Length: 154
Image 1 (tube, rainbow, N blue to C red):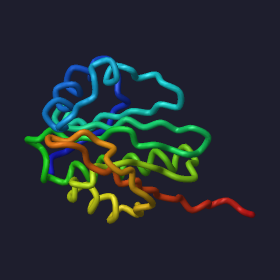
Image 2 (cartoon, helix red, strand yellow; image 1 turned 180 degrees about the vertical axis):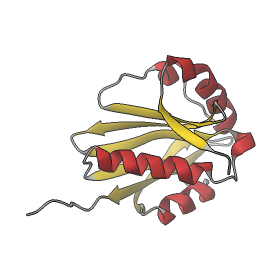
Image 3 (spheres, one colour; image 1 turned 180 degrees about the horizontal axis):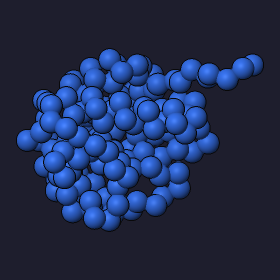
Image 4 (cartoon, rainbow, N blue to C red; image 1 turned 135 degrees about the horizontal axis):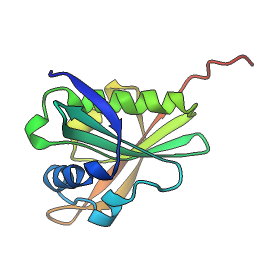
């Protein structure tokens, strides 16, 4: 894996993120959603390799409960461990914000992502039936959560 760094997502990253979004997702976010960086509790990061955006995540922290809203790695960089690196940074950022829990939804057909989330301490807690549009019909969303251990004194 090449040297990488993280940066807080800024307007200068939007076109690269939009491009990855279009290539990495079957039903990508609208450009207006990609460009919205300042929503309530938002913290959004890009993963850079040699000055190039290769992945990103959008997250929202509302009173200690964090939602991972979107995460992607450019298709040409998939399979290199960058998804694990992005998810690890997301969890690190959650802990730094004293989050109690993190939540996400993932397509039931996305077995690689589900395996990654399970390996990083997420657990399946529920399903939303027929939630996501699919090429033919709809598919379930798997709802997953991760709880952080409280390190303070009781």
